[in-house]
Length: 423
Image 1: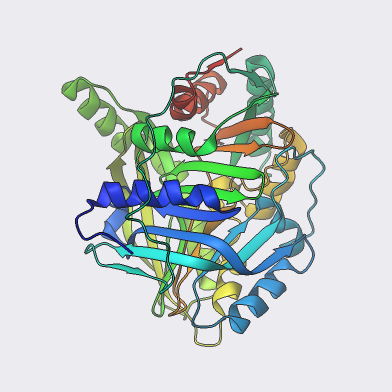
Image 2 (image 1 turned 45 degrees about the horizontal axis):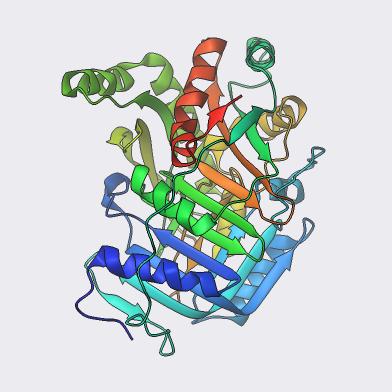
């Protein structure tokens, strides 16, 4: 089934090539990139085909997911949750169009699965297809000519950032994560090849390839939303970004400026406090600890400021309830959370869908790990719509033009992988 002579990278590529034969695919890859504080069990996971599945609209999706977990104890479960599930957790709504059309909630027990843990141990379902006969994917063909359109102009973006700053001045919120969409229509892609290129250009600890029939997500996320391991819950919000440079001195300077930035530290601290409050809904009193504050971690495209918060799960709290209690992640909303989400709906122009939602796994021991869906291409092959969204945290000290430049910095990997540009 699995050749002992294959290198780790060869094994991953063969799994990705095999995935072309299935309409349901979740591929989660850490690319040997260490997550913040070295926390995490798996290097690589792939789930192929759907033996049992749950598709739910907004209303009682978390209730259905909890039942699905209970009905399939001892099985691998993979799932994706749209940001708009906020609407069943609070008195909120979503008014904008969503041309990608991922389900609000999708969960499935795979027909076949394979896991590689951080020590290199490989396990799989007994009937996992033979990889010896799977050819390695062919090199990615160069693409050109894709022109992404802006959902809003730079002028509109900057105007709205300044309006959000007025909300902050008036005390409505302290911080708000404002996002904007870039899109292309009439696009024909081969998603597997594009993901191969993305994973080469931008390896991250929470990258993902997802296929649900004619819908695809190609992600290079550096951020963990929520991890359950044993009785411990961990959340690792990212707030704070700076550019990488080929020149070592310039790169170290960029990293140092990020760590020393009062603005970035203030943003990160606010979200760390918000996450502490979210975890307190599921964890034992007195168990919430900040394991690391303002940790600086370097990825291929950017330096990031990441904090790590841990708590001990109350025995009466179901794993799915713990997810719901912290959803959506504060790093993608702002503080206070509910008012931030109301203003996000007012000022943004695209329904977020799976962007700034979460996807990941629950293993047979009932431990789970979910990422934050950012730095991701989304593609609907049926209507040939391709998009990505990027955002930044707005505080009163934000300079609108600087925030827009940060959005473009975060878009860099998506544009490079497609040899694309913004019209």
